[in-house]
Length: 227
Image 1 (cartoon, helix red, strand yellow):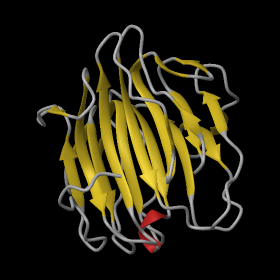
Image 2 (cartoon, one colour):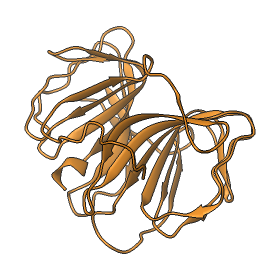
Image 3 (cartoon, one colour):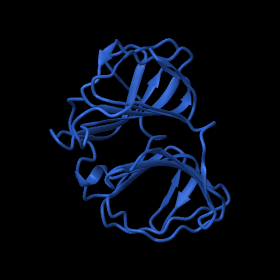
């Protein structure tokens, strides 16, 4: 994770970042730039959430991960030593994983580096949302793709595709939630979250989201804020 100053590090505050308005910042790796959404320095709770942009042919030198690294390909094709991953592919790489992040034709990826809640590396996860098995949630007018198991009730993540003109039940995010809108627009009683907006709701803060004519495709994560 980065050694820079903390960003959105207070878990008790709502955070909303419009990545469309944020400039790309250069990194130490040629052809790779970033937008930092969240950065927490803590030996147990430490995490960084960023968007990384790879110019065509750019790569990050081969290294071994110290923290867990989750990737969602937002656009383009991302690659490492183990394969290539198209848009809306999800990867979870555990500490100790050796890789060379790269992109032949360029890409934008969402990345979260996280000190694992439980010690010990789990299995690597690779999911292509375009070909994976989605579940229907007809009572919410949505389809859901679960990305990793919620065995201990602490962490879970999914991609949700909510149909147009749907109202979701009001809920209070008992374990906190962050969302990246991939397409369309989600609204609630506070504001509208359109494509490219990342927002984080603290534990216990309620909202009643809904969609209008566009519907909404979004990456959702829960549980990071309780640790």
